[in-house]
Image 1 (cartoon, chains in turn red, brown):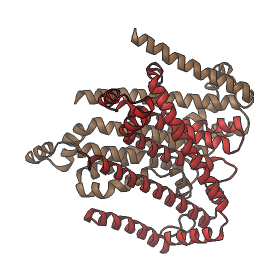
Image 2 (spheres, chains in turn green, red; image 1 turned 90 degrees about the horizontal axis):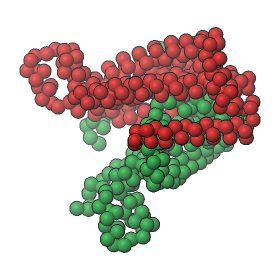
Image 3 (cartoon, one colour; image 1 turned 135 degrees about the vertical axis):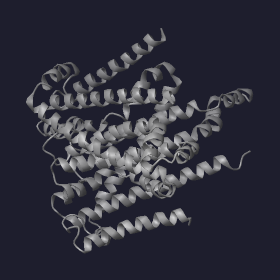
Image 4 (cartoon, helix red, strand yellow; image 1 turned 30 degrees about the horizontal axis):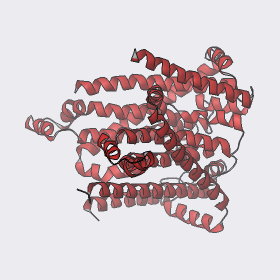
Length: 252
Length: 247
């Protein structure tokens, strides 16, 4: 590991250690934050008991569904909009403002329309994640070098073959950025929706544990979600690095 | 010609959205989702009520302090990590990792620390805003040509003078991008905070309206928040473009 990496590790371990110490000597009250070691043991007991398995399945299932829908539909919408320049010009101002307005505020409206079920959660998740994928697809298609389409014409490639062998690989880095953002936004929106109002799920569990003053359970669940989110982000980062390495090395 | 055509096209998109809204209203019924036209007339009535004024004032107050805190802490971290190379190299990946976490799961922790009043909301809003401000400030300062700093050293400027007269002016356009994004996410953070376990503010007003099936109230508040965020973002973007052109 590099020196910087070692220092970073020391900073993180030091911060957790300081929190542990502050909790142990009573500087931070047990009713407010429990020591990190207790969070870990509480999480271990919780997972071993199997009592949250149903909620874990439900929440992760919704997140996977939201991300899959956002990526597939966002990609398709991106291709369609890119093919229609006039539609795109009309939509551009909306794309530019989309992530500046609090779209999440419409979650209660969706509950009023569809009732308290999975539907509003999925819709608010897709609404949050899909636009990043559309914008990334548009960006990616914009950046396909003109020369590639000319090459395709010279070789008399079919439309589909051009798309698969030339355009898609050229746009891939931008598409991956869209995938990364969709995953991150989808995750955040689903957890937030569950936390604020939902019939079940991990976000709801945390809110319930908070209302019941059940700190061990609450911190165990928070730790669980933070670990899952960190692992997912780390995996996406590793993939990103690999793509970058492949792009820069190998071919002349 | 093209400008008018683009304007008409955007107008057509707005009309299409209103049409979708109308169709949703026909499907869902008036109690769940009121029709566009009555809602827009109701909007004018709603903004004059005391209830709206009280809640809007609560949101503005919390948002103001959250933004102040996010900017102060974010800029301090950003300047430090941008100017001190090792701190930046160590800290940046940590901040990037924190940035993509679902911060909502930390809200109960903040509520336990700061209580249910305005402080909890302010802390949660600021938590959203600090990270983008800090990250973009770090990037902005790191991108400053080293020769500027050498000139500052030759002139024997104090660290504070260096920050004020060299670092900030050179980094301003990009720092401003951070401030703009910080504005957006802090507003979202405050509203999210209000939607959970809060008795004041527009976020809590929307939740109450939902449980009372006051759809018109709910939709008008959501539209007003949209409009506020969009206009504010437009103004900040305009300033940002001017700053970029100046350099």
